[in-house]
Image (cartoon, rainbow over all chains, first blue to last red):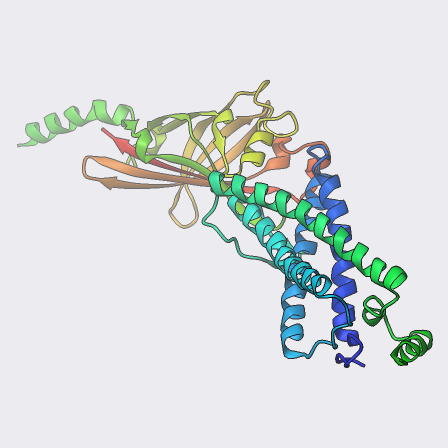
Length: 193
Length: 182
């Protein structure tokens, strides 16, 4: 199913979720590694890759949000109010962070007056009029702080999903995984009183 | 009458013997260049340079440009690049702090434009370089524009791993704009 159902995220929503998740993990690893490299052409290429992946994430998140607001989400899995409120807050934070992170990187790149090419295919315009040392320093600090906040929220998000699955034994994780016969059976079984 | 003309011509003779020496108004002059980095154009300038200009468009035989550039004054509006450029792999300003250009002769090109042939010494390499010269009198001064295209690898700028021209283009256009005062 491409679209969301009452009990399951559709394959479009799932593809967005897992693709963006994988890109963010790769992006974080590249980002932490690249800043340690010496000043060589390799460093320039790795930075260019980081920028291209970041722009890709930004575009995918915008598409994902467009899909999210035009689709009905699956019914909430029954759970205490505080869990539901925490889940909503962390999902909201995740969306804000995965938009703000690439944006702050783009802003830093612009204020530092570096080139910006999406995988060498097309030029992406600068957000500033050339070098702006004050904005550059602000954007870099923001980028780094937002990254570590994202790491914290992602850890909570993933831990909560695993906790729901293994301890609460509800469908929170399953409904974000591709429908297998086994998961269908499991859901039907759980639907029984 | 004839005597007066002769006398007048005689008066002009000393002027013809040397081309006019100009003062360069540094505040209104610039030595800039443009290259490509990661497929995008970037521009830079040398903030400090000293140009001795002797030029009279009616007497090219006596014209002479002698320019010394303080290479460490390079500014490309990118902090990281400006830190890398004076380094050993690029300009190596510790060993070669100055570039020097001096003209050998001036001539007219195919379309009547003025060309200045000279020698550029940059990063320890001397190469013949030809400038296209545009001279426009303004009041009692003049605007002088010169332009040429260099190949950075001819001078070993961006050596080793940085020689890759897909990352840093080989061609660099150099443009000098000088405000000349009497």
